[in-house]
Image (cartoon, rainbow, N blue to C red; front, top):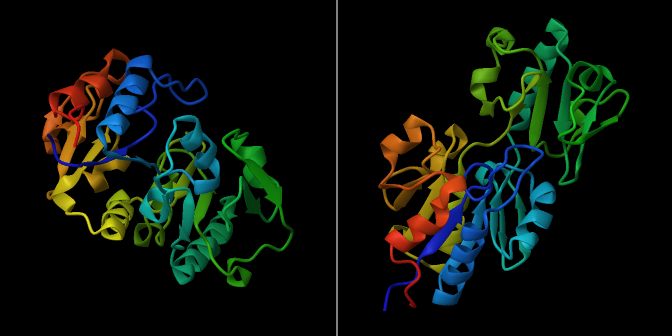
Length: 261
């Protein structure tokens, strides 16, 4: 008999292959998830995506648990426990700077599939299909109760001119804009573990990209996909094969996660 483990899976490049717009979960990964559930382990998504934009995918994969919003949102047994917002005063300063420098921006002020912008410049600049943008004339972060993400339209390198950006977590997934959003999945993982009173050493995390770096820390088992960036592999306890080459299945088998607890 094995011991119960708490498994946390990044989505893109880890659990799912195909890239943005063509995402699919390999059949071998689906079999691995089924076997881990049958063995009695706890399974959880760990994603940077907004909870509202990941919950349907969570259900499609048969999950009821999710660390979302880069670690700042937690769902356990289909109960959403909310999102910790970004520090409003820092967002206000960054928005003011973007206005001064003529950089289009948008905000995520609720857990919806829409972001808000003060005009159509963000949409015109980015032509983005990741999510829809609602124009709210006169939008001011000072009037927002909570802010979960900010989006800044700028080409690679231009973000370096923003003096207030380093005070906030951010990353670039698209060529046309950056995301100012939480990037500490370990925060959400600890919340889940604490909810169950589980020992952190019983957690197993699976990842591939730089935005997974925050959960590749000492104290639990870290699995890097074969297609992971070198920085992730350097911190991993185990390196499996590529996501498209049965990476999830091979890792779970190697770690003995198919054994009943």
